[in-house]
Image: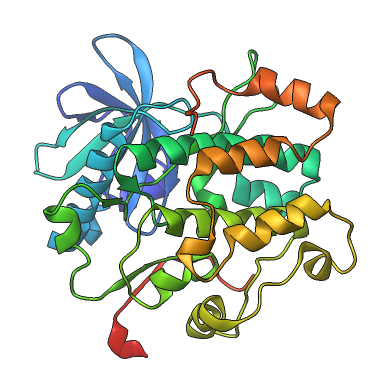
Length: 326
């Protein structure tokens, strides 16, 4: 069997055994820092996704962030958050984590195909994301990198219907932990993807769960209109707009599209510059979203929501810069 070039370039081979129990079957994806492999757990014959760091990019920082992602994802269990089944070190001390395989496509891919989604298609997606993020927040975890490529949509042909999954807790913050997570950001570095960063992220200030509310608002805005709420000529100018530019309406951004007034008000609240003026709980956001659609749509929506839900383009590249950039 011929190896995928992405696999060979990362130092792995088809049928190679990793961690003493995972046989490499193929490459599922490759990102800026790591590679995701389709593997088989040889003792039970079940397939998983194994994520590890590209051997060419191993460093103290990448290893620490990878461990942070594994720790954050393993700490939460919710239908709308991708599950981690195992993590550890390979024979060469490279960290890895093993996750469920999710069929479907990311919201980013979907938007490249359709530009935007109608309200009746978008709202069910975002209610599920609200549920997953609300659970993470209740567990003391702030995602800090909510964007279309980190939202996985289920395969529409799947039976029974799949669930939306939140991916990539690589720069997550533990709000109830004063150790390693703080050490990753205490120097004033700014982490995130400029198109979706909250004003407090952009300024390097302390963030809490309300930063995720803002980021999710940016993604919802783009999903409904086909454009993010703030786009500058550079990453830095985009970040400045998040901090000071007036919030556009959905109608303005969509060049005259019609949206329910309640939805326009929701967007203004999610995108408020001051965290105190935003939604304070994504469970409430999910409730308000469900009230936007008509009774027929709501009946379909309730049927598809997991019962475990809590009560309560310029560039999408993630960046790391320091305050002295300003």
